[in-house]
Amino acid sequence: MNDVIASEWLKVRSVRSTYWLLAAVAGALVLGTVVSVLMVADWDASPAAERERFASADMAVLVLPFLQFCVAVFGGLTVTSEYTTGTILSTLAAVPRRGRVLLGKVVVVGTATMLLALATTFLMLAVVSVVVGDRPSPIAPWESMSEGVGSALAAVAVLVVTAHVALCLGVAIRASAGTLVTMTVLLFVLPVAFTFLPEPWNLRLVSGTLPALPSQLAGSPGAVFSPGVAAVVLAAYVVVSCGIAYSALTRRDA
Image (cartoon, rainbow, N blue to C red; front, side, top):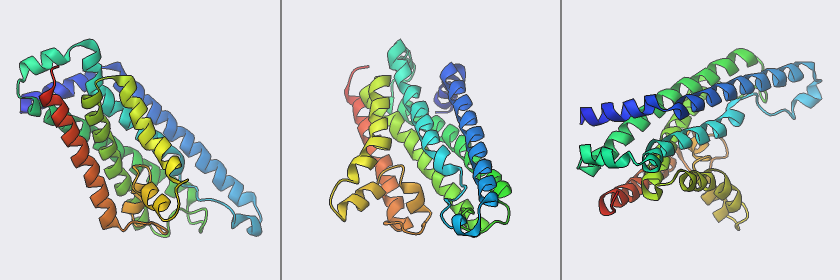
């Protein structure tokens, strides 16, 4: 199994798309920092009456959706690029037990995404804390640092699951375009479409989408699901997507 993981890790490190995605994430962090600094500067220059109408200077509101899409692209391309180039045949010939191939990809994608997510979310937490300083709500995203840490950890969990779902969809769909379109629907289309449904289904379904789960996991004010229910929903994404991928990989020819 160690050889399978090492092989998958080498594939991830040897493709240019990985580094382009890292560059895109770095650019998003820079943009988020600029936006937070400008918001705080505007807050300082505004009268007290107008300050109450400000949103928080949390850059995660801007950066996290983009980061979620980037890890989805990473997870999907990890497998669809092999189908595009035909190297999946070599992979399956070297490792005939297809479950091990899937497990190796899941471990590598999950570990890489977790490291990236931890680095980016806690970097955002640190930057926002420095930029906002001791300014009060609403420009301050959290009343205490523990709330910010909880939100960051919830975002990390959802980012890892997002990459996992994209990887599994890539195994089932076997095409980069189809996988990315499907993930776009899951991340951006369905959350908007669900808002047009009658209550209370609109709130429940929106709360169960991947973009909404970080706030549910963190127990943010106004969350529809408790952190426990949100964790069950997140686990369901993993179980269902893994089942689909395993079935597709073991029952179909390469």
